[in-house]
View 1 (tube, rainbow, N blue to C red):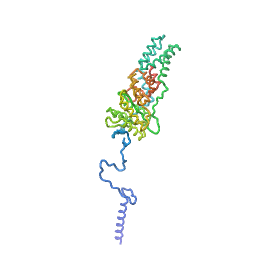
View 2: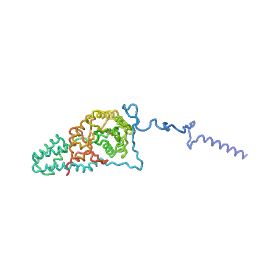
View 3: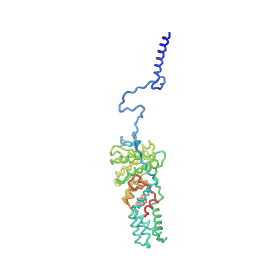
View 4: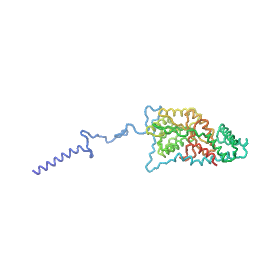
Length: 396
């Protein structure tokens, strides 16, 4: 009897365990009636893994993109390994103070010559002629030079002072008035609901790509989320150069692997990607072009128009080489007509004593100088400040 009961117990236990096994998979209960889905042992290379989205991440294109859009745009997302430390850009507010010594050095002759002439016991017509020559050689421009000289003559005559400190103060006041502190020199990058769009344009060789990279550092220093668009598709190294600049501060870059791809499409895709990523600012680098080449200038206009199908363009920054002096004025005028330039970036200002080009450009275009480049270092791009600039011109 006991043996029969024991056998019955063993059989019932086995049945219960079998039933329990039907309801347990790796320790997790299944809902009644649910079956395990069988997956094949292998997948074709094109199969998406279970749970993957229908489209891969990245700069994918849709059917309503601008005609001629390349199909292999990519985003270089600079996710550095854990051991890699990203650069920490210098705060924008401190740059001009640090770089002022360079500007002082390059304009030393300008200030010494003017102050020496204006401090003489007797300032006759010959002296005023010399003053005019110095101002003209500083690329101040004829109209501004004659206006400044006339004002200085009147004030020196009325005040009758030969004290160098007072003469310097008069000259400083008049130069500040010429440079015009009333311009709005801020960058229009504080917009709501979408990324601010900045286009950077200019002739060949002025350093546009480098300027975009340096400006990205300025934006990062201001805690902005930035995306770069490599719309210079004709210079082989441009996209790589821009990507390198961005990766140093953790900024992604949209580019095309197709040499000579439509720059307007790359620019459009960069703005679209920035919108998707909810970036604060997207900056579009464009190819250098001579201002007297109508077809190239028309292409630049197309880039802006295509971007505007997606978003307003908030800033068009024209990069000018300060060492070109008055030649830069004709460039600025044509570019402004084609893409409505909103601000000037003046590079290589530390390599010339022609600081007057700031006045000449602003007077002719009615567009402010917003940034100045004073060296080759990664943080040698600074917001322009009128009083600091004039003080550097006159510092001995």
